[in-house]
Image (cartoon, rainbow, N blue to C red):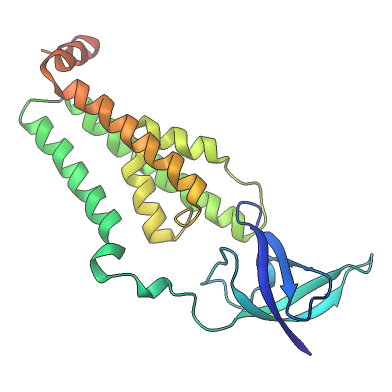
Length: 204
């Protein structure tokens, strides 16, 4: 027998939450592994149908969960969905162009490329861990990668992997790290900052 309810108290970093049944009965525990389709990940407040079972202690748990209707992810404007990738590419092109123009040392471009690759891999591993209920990468670690110059790779991972792109608290901190990193780059890009950067790297 299938039941219907709404997902509440969803903890995406841990991969579980609860379903509040439409009939007002006791909340039902739900785990990410219990969803019939892994292509659509819950964010909270979705209407779902499910089958009911009980664990060894008699607590209700949902299984074979299916979303009711569409959550609306494909409804975003055509250009908006690709905006993160466009921003990532544009920024890396700007950094590369600045290196060729002699405004930034090549080490800066290398830093952004390496940090972005590390950040992308970290996001991929974290999403895999979330799906398989394994040890997760701390959000502070992901933010540190972004702050260190890996935010272009992190932004691309959020778009391509659909990971950490809907959690508002994470997105707020992420964009703070982007602004801080860009402010640091803007200072290094200035004449005084460039002198300091070149002296630090031993270049002329």
